[in-house]
Length: 316
Image (cartoon, rainbow, N blue to C red; front, top):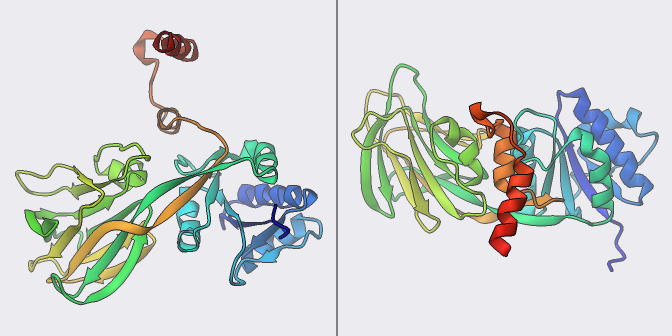
């Protein structure tokens, strides 16, 4: 067993009092169990009046030895934390105080459970693929910008009244030319985010694949495509009436692009590590988060009993 004191990093939604209150309860609970929490300066300042003199470590001090980062907020805050955590190979666990919260593990009312599980080291880590996005000055040319995405890389038009003209290549071979509002390249994790709103399919997160989704494209063939994780997608911005576009990674990091520039998307070098305390099947999360009408018009059914019967028949 390591003799080093345990440290847990945390980040807090800047605009939700409930997130701050939950984080304060977490900090005091961890301190009572001999675990130190690390926070950024602004979060530490907000927490200070609520934690009764509990000392907080400095999240900006490098190298960071935190075993985990706990995020109090919604999926947007988890993506913000991932910017910090993914390059450092540190797992992320989310406490949902947002709306849908697909990436989050628990709701805020489950805080006592969270404290006990983390204090006891009783959690496991699952890995999710990411995407590396590279913007080049021209097709096959010099790299001018690079970032990564947990959910998606999106190319979007700048002018509302004009469409982008793009040529999409798959592994160097031309696929199609589109006049479009934009193009998404998504991970399975991101298939329930922006890609879902753009009518892409839901992909189970344990799969390793890329999802290509054109947005409002004027073309005979403009269907979403599920691609191998070894695929390289190139999107060239063609000359046209539009002034150009903007590339976004997870809606957080962006760069403007103009005609002739190329966006390359491929499987990322880093993995997102998500900490979990339960083995909740993804289908249960999908039903719960989207409020899917499992009962339908026929009325309520004891689905837990039905599932138990099905599993019993399958095993015996």
